[in-house]
Image (cartoon, helix red, strand yellow):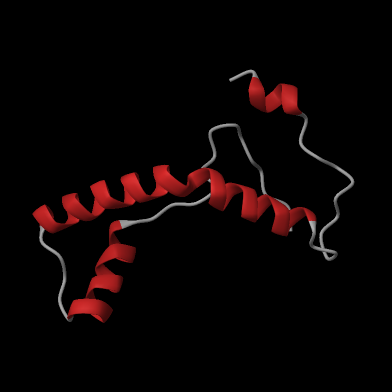
Length: 82
C-alpha cells in the first residue's frame, strides 16, 4: 500500500463524529457544543502529555513489523526542511 505523504500530512485525525459516536456509546446521547469544546481541550492536553510515549511505541511497532518493507525510508531533507 502506497500513500503519498507530504510533510504536513496528518498521521492521525480525530473528527467530531468520532467524539459523538463515543459519547453515544458512553453516555447515550450526543455532546453539546460546549461539551465538545471541553472534549477538544482534554484531547489536546492528553495527547500533548503522552505524545512522545505514544509516538515512540508506534515507531517501535512499525520498525519491528516483519510484514513491512523497511528498505525505502522517506528522505529526511524533504521532511525536516519545512
